[in-house]
Image (cartoon, rainbow, N blue to C red):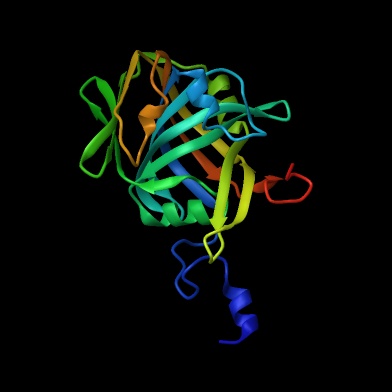
Length: 250
C-alpha cells in the first residue's frame, strides 16, 4: 500500500476495516426517556469545562433506544447531559454516556469526542411504566421510571431542544501519553421528524460507582419527565474552542 493510498483511505481505525462507516448517520424511531433534575451547583461547576457556562443547576438523565441507525445498528444508550450556554446561546453539554455497542463507542469518541463507555443500559415498558436502567458490569448505577404517556408534551419545545447546539470535550492523547487534541466541539441534529412526545410523573435514583460516577451529580429534585420518539440525522461537528491553541492558552 502506497503512502497516497493510506492517506486516501484513512478516516477511522483499523485502516483496512474501520469500526464504523462514513456518515451521514441516520436514526429511525429513536426513543428517548429524559428525566430532568436539579443538582448541587458546586458539583456541576466542577465538571463543566469553560468556556461553557452553567445557566441553572440542572441535569438531564437520558435513556435512548436506537433500533435502527446507519452503520451503528441496534443499541441503547444512557447518560447525563447538562444544559449550558456558549457565547450567549443555550445548548447542551454531554457529560457522560454509557452504551452497549462497539461501533458507536468507537465512532462517537474518534469523530466527535462523545464521552462514551461500555455498559448495559435498557429502556422498556413494564405494564403502565416506562423504565430505564443502567448497569455498569453487574452493578446497577441508575434507574428511571415514568408513567407511560400520561400527557401530551409541547412538541414545539421538544423540537427546540433537539435543534439546539450540543457540545463535547474531545480529548486524544499523543503516543507519549500527553494530550495532543483537546477541543470543544459543537454539533447539531438535523432532519428531525418528531413522531410523538409525552409527559408524566417521573423518578430517578443514582448509585455511586468508582468508574461510572453518575451519582456525583446528585438528584435533589425531579423537574420533569419526557418521553418521545423521533427520526433524525446526527450531523458531523465543528471545533469552536481549541484548548491547546496559543490564542486560547491563557
